[in-house]
Length: 235
Image (tube, rainbow, N blue to C red):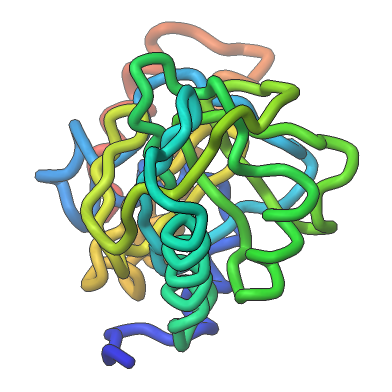
């Protein structure tokens, strides 16, 4: 297994903050990433009440609009290979699947069975531009962020795995750190994982100056102007 500059506990710590907060903190520690590295289209969340997920990416591509064209035994071998790939992880994982169909989401990879299988394989959840189903029967605690909800799995099948994928504008490679919740998902550079808690605390202190003024019964633009100046001085 590859060595990482963070631990299981570091990833678990980041689950206490929502994904927009993670994105805000990345603006401090990796300002060059401000305009990319996150999903940029509306997504469906299987259960908005679940906490965020954060883990190492296990990447794959799927299709569902038509049969794979491969022999049945080859389809089965690819699926088993995918399961083995997801299981080879020393830390919690997040599955990131790109649906390659012209109209992503024709058939759902994710449902009752695959959520149970992947939870057992060590995944916290999944992110996909494809579809999900069985919303009331998903494995407990397993979060899914998807493009659409669809009732059928159609001809869904694995195409390949372990390569770079793109989901709603977010490019993801094997072993990237993914943080996701009902807002969408973001890739966290490895060297930023341990820097984020301090950056989050800094951002909170800066925002508090503005929020306190806005909640003041005697709010005025003059006070807001002064607060913005104070906010810029906080480091």
